[in-house]
Image (cartoon, helix red, strand yellow):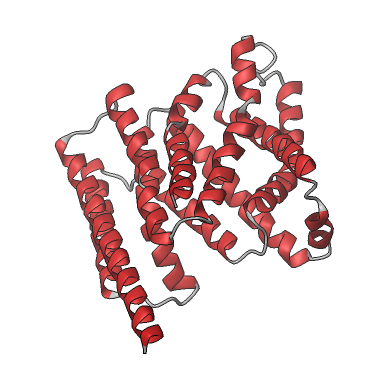
Length: 299
């Protein structure tokens, strides 16, 4: 239990500190950062698979075109999520990005209802309605829909939905996704280089090393999360997931000095209240389920 909490918490802390990493790469265009992230993630994951001698799954996957097609869609969703996140960090929208990951658990609930026909409990409906009110308030206050937060929540929520129904684990799944993205990333980087729009060759050595480190920086938190998720209950994992957007929000307000006035705070408070209702309701439901199982076993 302690080991699982340590792994999961560390992964969420690392994800929460991502704005520091991507802001340090501001000299590169978001699309170039994204392409390098795809390439070096594949290289790092290939090394991990090689060391673990974990390649047999790839032969089985090649024989399943429907599975490959599903992972092609999830790869596009993941790359879209990565691009929007990188763009928002390097364009002064760290707080908007944090909003997206605050909303993701509630988007997951709503997608489960709409696409998997899962039944929502009254507390879950209440939390979704409260979050919707918060988003509506932010839209009215800003004069436009908070598209960054919604786009991040929808892409990551949809990605999570596809991965939930997929047959591959975290390591194999991410490896297949980056493998499918590799031809596009390599071709696009080649085009940028030929057109003189790639800044990698002209960048300082430190910046080049940081960009090359995108592989392990992407993969290590995911692997730690996968290890932690196997060792702790989903309810605990659900509470820990708020570490990441909370750190992003703190960085956006205190370090990057983004605007966060009282009117904007009201919208966030509504979403935080929705998350509180969602978490408490989930914990209560898990407690009642365990109690019911215990009573059944005694009987």
